[in-house]
Length: 373
Ligand code: SF4
Image: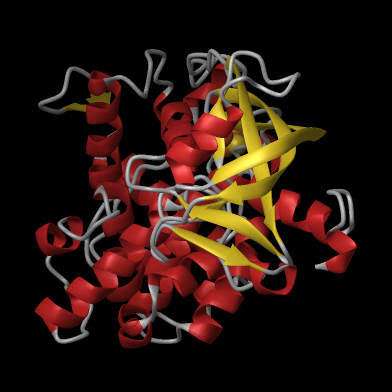
């Protein structure tokens, strides 16, 4: 073991060489055939990496295929309407990623002539790209010697180092990034980084890692000591907050009212039925008419409770009470902010997850006379 500037002994050069050899051999035999691995186009790798932030591989696959079919090149994405980009992202969650991707595509076209930049600082300056994503794109597309640390490799590195402190803390992150840099070969960096992520994802799993199948088990101190259940240390538990909200389907003849969520709101850029927090959502909340007017400019009457949807977003456990109300008077806000749409037109709008569920209920007749829409 040799010491580094960090307060932790990293493995020596001979250990690193053996890990590289074993891992690359294993990866060539075991790599999954994933749609974004079929070539080294930085655009496709970038899209996949952004989609894979917070989302599982199997969920991402169909979204990725649809997205690159509609937006096959960075110029196509840059020139697309944001609403259409969001519509292709709908269901993946964390919509900020899609909006940042769209903004970054415009920057790549405006500032780099449509060529993905190769300088790590320039890549990290693009919206939505942090150190990990930049390292992944640059190493996989261009074989740049850029390290990576993400969820799977955080666990794998912690175990390969028998790192017993919190790997998510600042000092832990310093140790893991230093290790990621020191273990990286000079060439085939993209293949090696993918091998690390693949091993973390398929073999060195959070619970019951498949150590018997692991190509580096003879080099792994965690396996040697039987500490797999203790490393890495558990992440802090999320403290959930229960929240009551109200959504209102406002009807006017054969249309319902949608509102576009503004900057800083949970689903910024997406459309939704008028929605707000409420202390007493089980009865027709006294503030319903006033809140709908504040949000849309429209006065409503005859509000009736229809159904309840329970869902979770980040740390919030939300009970959403859904009401139906009828247009009484007033002009809706501009077309940028609010729109009257028929059920058929709902599919053209990128909706929040619950907005889409309510839209389906409206189409199925669960809300009043929707069959007539
Ligand atoms: S031997 Fe087990 S704990 Fe060690 S890296 Fe392999 S799978 Fe992970």
